[in-house]
Image (cartoon, rainbow, N blue to C red):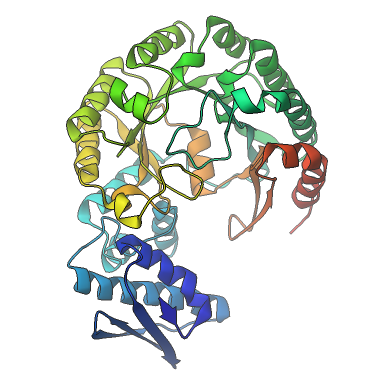
Length: 456
């Protein structure tokens, strides 16, 4: 991929990746007055496009230049390959943010999505999500969501690209990591006027022994009033225990996540899990003895899993009737052992899996309430959170729609401060690897305080 306009290159490469990186394309751009001209050469063919759009300033110019360049390249590659993507030329993480921006400008979002080539079923999905977020969506000055990350797991799954580490090899860091995390959490005092929600994620927080898990809960306790939505991503079924669930209840946790990913034992073995579907059933039953809302996670497109096997997992999740079911699409990034050729991500069957999940969950009374997309997703699809009416996770809505400040603590955590009702977002990120985080947690906390206490 080559272009004569460097600032467009990252946007254009995002489109190339939708089709696989084996395409040799040339892009040229020019602007004459209010007209944006894009020319694409691919496969020995030349495609020319022109769009008229007045721009008030340089920021607006760059936004439309990126938009029209992506559209031009997408349309050219669609013509070359005969293939269309479910989200068309949309490559951003948050399609709903674009929809909200159109609505805020007084326009329906459908026409813009259609221009981008988004399929009607996904336009309908976004509409459903916006309806589900009514009462949850909105900027709250001074309000924040609080996150604490536990980057340890029982094993590392072969599709995982997160910084999570096998605790059998990194257990020596746990004590020092928790000390650093406690300090970073304590440094959040005074950085927000009200707490909207709290979330302990991972990794697999339940891989910690009860005494270690309580250190995290105790550190967060001064910040989380009783009755606040409070989620713990407990994680894999093989690390569940009554003692840990009782701890969560004691500290006011309201929601737990059980992450089986599949109810097929053969799939679980292939991806490097050390639990079975029966273990998931036991963990779920254990969680149901406590007053928690429960979320179950599934992944479409796991190694070697058939459409029928995935559909049976959806069926079983629905039969268990948790308050939330999250349906992810396999995403392979650098750092995942499964990362292979780009064509690997055009895996047949993923579209059928997701279509089945949408129909089954809808019939069972669940509604989609948030979604996000990533690069390198199988079939260029999405991750969607589904909930029973009245059980949407406010933390997920806040973090995905970027409508509240987010104070994120732990390795690889990124805190976000909103200015101008989200018109500008500034971030402070922590080191990804555990030893570096331990060494620099104090420095991260100081940068975070400087950002969150700054006016304007």
